[in-house]
Length: 304
Image (tube, rainbow, N blue to C red; front, side, top):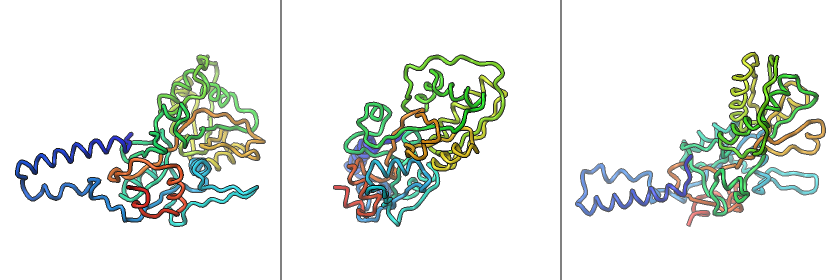
Protein backbone atom coordinates (compact mmCIF):
# COMPACT_ATOMS: atom_id res chain seq x y z
CA UNK A 1 0.00 0.00 0.00
CA UNK A 2 1.40 3.38 -0.97
CA UNK A 3 0.28 6.73 0.41
CA UNK A 4 1.24 10.12 -0.98
CA UNK A 5 2.47 11.50 2.31
CA UNK A 6 5.33 9.01 2.14
CA UNK A 7 6.27 9.94 -1.42
CA UNK A 8 7.08 13.54 -0.49
CA UNK A 9 9.84 12.36 1.84
CA UNK A 10 11.23 10.06 -0.82
CA UNK A 11 11.21 12.90 -3.33
CA UNK A 12 12.97 15.16 -0.87
CA UNK A 13 15.72 12.58 -0.40
CA UNK A 14 16.04 12.18 -4.15
CA UNK A 15 16.31 15.94 -4.61
CA UNK A 16 19.01 16.13 -1.91
CA UNK A 17 21.01 13.40 -3.62
CA UNK A 18 20.67 15.14 -6.98
CA UNK A 19 21.89 18.46 -5.57
CA UNK A 20 24.85 16.69 -4.02
CA UNK A 21 25.75 15.18 -7.36
CA UNK A 22 25.56 18.60 -9.03
CA UNK A 23 27.78 20.09 -6.35
CA UNK A 24 30.35 17.42 -7.19
CA UNK A 25 30.44 18.62 -10.75
CA UNK A 26 27.77 16.41 -12.26
CA UNK A 27 28.27 13.38 -14.46
CA UNK A 28 27.29 12.34 -17.97
CA UNK A 29 24.42 13.73 -20.04
CA UNK A 30 21.95 11.06 -18.87
CA UNK A 31 21.74 12.66 -15.42
CA UNK A 32 19.81 15.59 -16.85
CA UNK A 33 17.01 13.31 -18.08
CA UNK A 34 16.30 11.44 -14.86
CA UNK A 35 13.77 13.82 -13.29
CA UNK A 36 10.75 13.33 -15.54
CA UNK A 37 8.87 11.61 -12.70
CA UNK A 38 9.72 14.14 -10.01
CA UNK A 39 7.10 16.46 -8.50
CA UNK A 40 8.82 19.47 -10.04
CA UNK A 41 8.06 18.18 -13.53
CA UNK A 42 4.39 17.41 -12.88
CA UNK A 43 2.32 19.70 -15.09
CA UNK A 44 -0.50 21.02 -12.90
CA UNK A 45 -2.11 22.75 -15.88
CA UNK A 46 -3.09 19.40 -17.35
CA UNK A 47 -6.66 18.17 -17.23
CA UNK A 48 -7.70 15.69 -14.53
CA UNK A 49 -8.73 12.26 -15.80
CA UNK A 50 -11.64 11.15 -13.64
CA UNK A 51 -12.04 7.38 -13.30
CA UNK A 52 -15.30 6.17 -11.76
CA UNK A 53 -17.13 2.90 -11.21
CA UNK A 54 -20.21 1.76 -13.10
CA UNK A 55 -23.69 2.48 -11.75
CA UNK A 56 -24.11 -1.09 -10.45
CA UNK A 57 -21.15 -0.62 -8.12
CA UNK A 58 -21.75 -0.37 -4.39
CA UNK A 59 -18.43 1.44 -4.09
CA UNK A 60 -19.71 4.13 -6.46
CA UNK A 61 -22.98 4.39 -4.56
CA UNK A 62 -21.28 4.76 -1.19
CA UNK A 63 -18.59 7.12 -2.53
CA UNK A 64 -21.10 9.39 -4.26
CA UNK A 65 -23.37 9.56 -1.22
CA UNK A 66 -20.56 10.36 1.23
CA UNK A 67 -18.79 12.93 -0.97
CA UNK A 68 -21.92 14.69 -2.19
CA UNK A 69 -21.59 13.63 -5.82
CA UNK A 70 -25.05 12.16 -5.33
CA UNK A 71 -27.62 14.88 -4.63
CA UNK A 72 -30.93 14.05 -2.97
CA UNK A 73 -33.98 16.26 -3.36
CA UNK A 74 -36.95 14.66 -1.68
CA UNK A 75 -37.49 11.32 -3.39
CA UNK A 76 -35.28 12.29 -6.30
CA UNK A 77 -31.60 11.33 -6.47
CA UNK A 78 -29.22 12.81 -9.03
CA UNK A 79 -25.82 11.26 -9.71
CA UNK A 80 -23.60 14.15 -10.79
CA UNK A 81 -20.58 12.09 -11.78
CA UNK A 82 -18.67 14.00 -14.46
CA UNK A 83 -19.84 13.18 -17.97
CA UNK A 84 -16.20 12.89 -19.02
CA UNK A 85 -15.44 10.21 -16.43
CA UNK A 86 -13.91 6.95 -17.61
CA UNK A 87 -16.14 4.18 -16.27
CA UNK A 88 -14.71 0.91 -14.96
CA UNK A 89 -16.70 -2.18 -14.03
CA UNK A 90 -14.37 -3.38 -11.28
CA UNK A 91 -11.79 -2.38 -8.69
CA UNK A 92 -8.84 -3.64 -10.73
CA UNK A 93 -10.02 -1.66 -13.72
CA UNK A 94 -9.79 1.56 -11.70
CA UNK A 95 -6.33 0.65 -10.39
CA UNK A 96 -5.07 -0.11 -13.89
CA UNK A 97 -6.55 3.04 -15.43
CA UNK A 98 -5.08 5.34 -12.77
CA UNK A 99 -1.70 3.58 -12.75
CA UNK A 100 -1.38 4.10 -16.51
CA UNK A 101 -2.44 7.78 -16.58
CA UNK A 102 -0.32 10.34 -14.73
CA UNK A 103 -3.37 12.63 -14.54
CA UNK A 104 -5.76 9.93 -13.39
CA UNK A 105 -7.77 9.91 -10.16
CA UNK A 106 -10.22 7.28 -8.98
CA UNK A 107 -11.59 5.54 -5.91
CA UNK A 108 -11.26 1.95 -4.70
CA UNK A 109 -11.78 -0.19 -1.64
CA UNK A 110 -9.09 0.64 0.92
CA UNK A 111 -8.51 -3.09 1.35
CA UNK A 112 -7.53 -3.26 -2.34
CA UNK A 113 -5.00 -0.40 -2.19
CA UNK A 114 -1.57 -1.51 -3.36
CA UNK A 115 1.67 -0.01 -4.66
CA UNK A 116 0.31 0.39 -8.20
CA UNK A 117 -1.39 3.65 -7.18
CA UNK A 118 -1.16 6.13 -4.32
CA UNK A 119 -3.82 6.89 -1.74
CA UNK A 120 -4.26 10.54 -0.76
CA UNK A 121 -5.29 12.04 2.56
CA UNK A 122 -8.85 13.34 2.89
CA UNK A 123 -9.38 16.31 5.21
CA UNK A 124 -5.82 15.72 6.48
CA UNK A 125 -6.62 12.12 7.51
CA UNK A 126 -4.66 9.20 6.09
CA UNK A 127 -6.69 6.30 4.63
CA UNK A 128 -5.67 3.46 6.95
CA UNK A 129 -7.18 0.57 8.86
CA UNK A 130 -6.88 2.53 12.11
CA UNK A 131 -8.48 5.74 10.83
CA UNK A 132 -11.43 3.81 9.43
CA UNK A 133 -11.79 1.94 12.72
CA UNK A 134 -11.73 5.11 14.84
CA UNK A 135 -14.10 6.96 12.50
CA UNK A 136 -11.71 9.79 11.62
CA UNK A 137 -11.39 8.87 7.93
CA UNK A 138 -14.50 10.33 6.30
CA UNK A 139 -15.06 7.99 3.34
CA UNK A 140 -16.04 4.62 4.79
CA UNK A 141 -18.86 2.09 4.33
CA UNK A 142 -19.95 -1.42 5.36
CA UNK A 143 -19.47 -4.65 3.46
CA UNK A 144 -22.87 -6.32 3.54
CA UNK A 145 -24.10 -9.81 2.82
CA UNK A 146 -27.75 -10.63 2.31
CA UNK A 147 -30.07 -13.53 1.64
CA UNK A 148 -33.75 -14.02 0.97
CA UNK A 149 -35.50 -17.18 2.14
CA UNK A 150 -33.95 -19.66 4.55
CA UNK A 151 -30.44 -20.67 3.61
CA UNK A 152 -29.45 -24.21 2.68
CA UNK A 153 -27.65 -26.11 5.48
CA UNK A 154 -24.25 -25.52 3.88
CA UNK A 155 -24.92 -21.83 3.21
CA UNK A 156 -26.20 -21.33 6.76
CA UNK A 157 -23.05 -22.96 8.10
CA UNK A 158 -20.93 -20.63 5.96
CA UNK A 159 -22.92 -17.66 7.24
CA UNK A 160 -22.22 -18.72 10.82
CA UNK A 161 -18.53 -19.16 10.00
CA UNK A 162 -18.28 -15.59 8.65
CA UNK A 163 -19.38 -14.16 11.98
CA UNK A 164 -17.28 -16.50 14.12
CA UNK A 165 -13.94 -15.55 15.67
CA UNK A 166 -12.17 -17.36 12.84
CA UNK A 167 -14.16 -15.65 10.11
CA UNK A 168 -13.74 -12.20 11.60
CA UNK A 169 -10.00 -12.81 12.06
CA UNK A 170 -9.78 -13.39 8.30
CA UNK A 171 -11.62 -10.10 7.73
CA UNK A 172 -8.99 -8.28 9.77
CA UNK A 173 -6.08 -10.14 8.15
CA UNK A 174 -7.31 -8.92 4.77
CA UNK A 175 -7.13 -5.30 5.95
CA UNK A 176 -10.78 -4.67 6.82
CA UNK A 177 -12.48 -3.76 10.09
CA UNK A 178 -14.25 -6.71 11.74
CA UNK A 179 -17.82 -6.14 12.92
CA UNK A 180 -17.65 -8.85 15.60
CA UNK A 181 -14.33 -8.36 17.43
CA UNK A 182 -15.53 -10.49 20.35
CA UNK A 183 -17.10 -13.24 18.26
CA UNK A 184 -17.26 -16.79 19.64
CA UNK A 185 -15.05 -19.55 18.29
CA UNK A 186 -16.49 -21.56 15.44
CA UNK A 187 -17.90 -24.99 16.22
CA UNK A 188 -17.65 -27.47 13.36
CA UNK A 189 -20.73 -29.32 12.17
CA UNK A 190 -21.12 -32.74 10.56
CA UNK A 191 -22.34 -33.68 7.12
CA UNK A 192 -21.81 -30.29 5.48
CA UNK A 193 -21.55 -30.63 1.71
CA UNK A 194 -22.90 -29.15 -1.50
CA UNK A 195 -22.59 -25.88 -3.42
CA UNK A 196 -22.78 -22.34 -2.07
CA UNK A 197 -23.26 -19.47 -4.51
CA UNK A 198 -22.35 -15.84 -3.86
CA UNK A 199 -22.87 -12.89 -6.21
CA UNK A 200 -22.29 -9.16 -6.05
CA UNK A 201 -19.71 -6.57 -5.13
CA UNK A 202 -16.24 -6.68 -6.68
CA UNK A 203 -14.97 -5.04 -3.47
CA UNK A 204 -16.46 -7.68 -1.16
CA UNK A 205 -15.49 -10.59 -3.42
CA UNK A 206 -11.79 -10.80 -2.39
CA UNK A 207 -12.48 -11.16 1.34
CA UNK A 208 -15.44 -13.44 0.63
CA UNK A 209 -13.13 -15.67 -1.41
CA UNK A 210 -10.58 -15.85 1.41
CA UNK A 211 -13.27 -16.82 3.90
CA UNK A 212 -14.70 -19.40 1.50
CA UNK A 213 -11.26 -20.99 1.06
CA UNK A 214 -10.89 -21.33 4.82
CA UNK A 215 -14.37 -22.85 4.98
CA UNK A 216 -13.58 -25.49 2.36
CA UNK A 217 -10.51 -26.50 4.34
CA UNK A 218 -12.92 -27.52 7.10
CA UNK A 219 -15.53 -28.91 4.70
CA UNK A 220 -13.79 -30.26 1.57
CA UNK A 221 -17.10 -31.50 0.14
CA UNK A 222 -18.36 -27.92 -0.20
CA UNK A 223 -17.77 -25.99 -3.42
CA UNK A 224 -18.28 -22.28 -4.03
CA UNK A 225 -19.54 -20.38 -7.03
CA UNK A 226 -18.61 -16.71 -6.62
CA UNK A 227 -19.61 -14.11 -9.20
CA UNK A 228 -18.39 -10.51 -8.84
CA UNK A 229 -21.08 -8.68 -10.80
CA UNK A 230 -21.58 -5.52 -8.73
CA UNK A 231 -23.57 -4.74 -5.59
CA UNK A 232 -26.89 -4.09 -7.30
CA UNK A 233 -26.67 -7.39 -9.15
CA UNK A 234 -25.81 -9.13 -5.88
CA UNK A 235 -28.86 -7.69 -4.14
CA UNK A 236 -31.06 -8.79 -7.04
CA UNK A 237 -29.53 -12.28 -6.97
CA UNK A 238 -30.34 -12.61 -3.28
CA UNK A 239 -33.89 -11.37 -3.85
CA UNK A 240 -34.68 -13.76 -6.68
CA UNK A 241 -32.65 -16.63 -5.18
CA UNK A 242 -30.32 -17.02 -8.14
CA UNK A 243 -27.54 -16.88 -5.54
CA UNK A 244 -27.57 -18.10 -1.95
CA UNK A 245 -25.94 -14.91 -0.68
CA UNK A 246 -25.65 -11.46 -2.24
CA UNK A 247 -22.68 -9.16 -1.58
CA UNK A 248 -22.96 -5.36 -1.43
CA UNK A 249 -20.34 -2.75 -0.63
CA UNK A 250 -22.95 -0.17 0.35
CA UNK A 251 -25.99 0.21 2.53
CA UNK A 252 -29.14 -1.32 1.06
CA UNK A 253 -32.17 0.85 0.49
CA UNK A 254 -35.27 0.24 2.59
CA UNK A 255 -36.98 -1.28 -0.43
CA UNK A 256 -34.06 -3.64 -1.12
CA UNK A 257 -33.72 -4.72 2.49
CA UNK A 258 -37.44 -5.32 3.02
CA UNK A 259 -37.31 -8.85 1.62
CA UNK A 260 -33.81 -9.76 2.76
CA UNK A 261 -31.80 -10.61 5.85
CA UNK A 262 -28.85 -8.22 5.76
CA UNK A 263 -25.72 -8.17 7.93
CA UNK A 264 -22.45 -6.26 7.67
CA UNK A 265 -19.47 -8.62 7.67
CA UNK A 266 -16.85 -5.85 7.76
CA UNK A 267 -16.27 -2.12 7.47
CA UNK A 268 -14.00 -0.63 4.84
CA UNK A 269 -12.70 2.73 3.72
CA UNK A 270 -12.84 4.02 0.18
CA UNK A 271 -9.44 5.33 -0.88
CA UNK A 272 -9.10 8.16 -3.38
CA UNK A 273 -6.14 7.19 -5.54
CA UNK A 274 -3.84 8.95 -7.98
CA UNK A 275 -0.93 7.95 -10.18
CA UNK A 276 2.34 7.31 -8.36
CA UNK A 277 3.99 10.17 -10.26
CA UNK A 278 1.41 12.68 -9.08
CA UNK A 279 2.77 14.70 -6.10
CA UNK A 280 -0.70 15.40 -4.70
CA UNK A 281 -0.78 14.59 -0.97
CA UNK A 282 -4.32 15.36 0.08
CA UNK A 283 -7.72 16.80 -0.74
CA UNK A 284 -10.67 18.10 1.20
CA UNK A 285 -13.97 16.27 0.90
CA UNK A 286 -15.32 19.29 -0.99
CA UNK A 287 -12.44 19.12 -3.47
CA UNK A 288 -13.14 15.43 -4.03
CA UNK A 289 -16.73 16.25 -4.87
CA UNK A 290 -15.69 19.08 -7.20
CA UNK A 291 -13.27 16.82 -9.07
CA UNK A 292 -15.67 13.93 -9.53
CA UNK A 293 -18.55 16.17 -10.62
CA UNK A 294 -16.35 17.99 -13.14
CA UNK A 295 -16.49 21.36 -11.40
CA UNK A 296 -12.69 21.23 -11.06
CA UNK A 297 -10.91 20.04 -14.19
CA UNK A 298 -7.20 20.80 -13.74
CA UNK A 299 -4.71 19.93 -11.03
CA UNK A 300 -3.63 23.54 -10.48
CA UNK A 301 -7.09 24.22 -9.03
CA UNK A 302 -6.44 21.88 -6.08
CA UNK A 303 -2.64 22.00 -5.76
CA UNK A 304 -0.75 24.94 -4.34
